[in-house]
Image 1 (cartoon, rainbow, N blue to C red):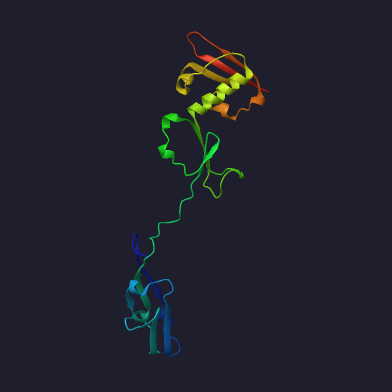
Image 2: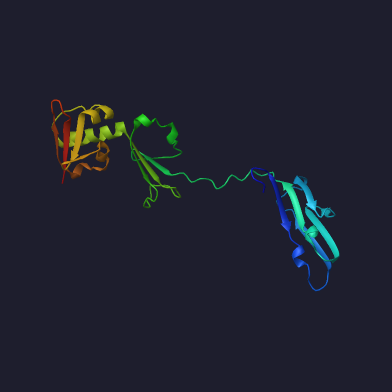
Length: 213
């Protein structure tokens, strides 16, 4: 096949039989055009072949083969051009839900809180196979909603958290005393939370402190 073209050819070498013990008394070469339309053939070598139905037939007598006797058939494929292997898409997990036929380029970057790429995820019955890795994306609204849910479940303090960007600007999140990114609340189960405390500070960032069991 010629690159980016429907032009194709195949060949059958005869010249490798040269210098045998004498000439080839008679040789008949038959090519069966199984999946190739006869009218798609542009040329053949040697030219003196017989065309019968879906067959090309060459008959040689007293043959001492050279490269001029090599069979070559050139044709134009009526099939779709080969474009390489179909790429296997990754599995997209958006806010813990599998998204089929997801186009990440259509998702506004300003909505994304965190992206995690796992090229070799463990087998999971909820993930379609085969796949080319797992991409987890959590949106800013999802992270804030998750944190709100933990606060309401574990504290009597009434607080309406602002949007994600404002939250990061005005609050610090500490889990077991360590400052972490707000996206870390995604992996926290309510049952694992022992205590949540909110400390408001004047002139400094307020603190949301989560203590795990």
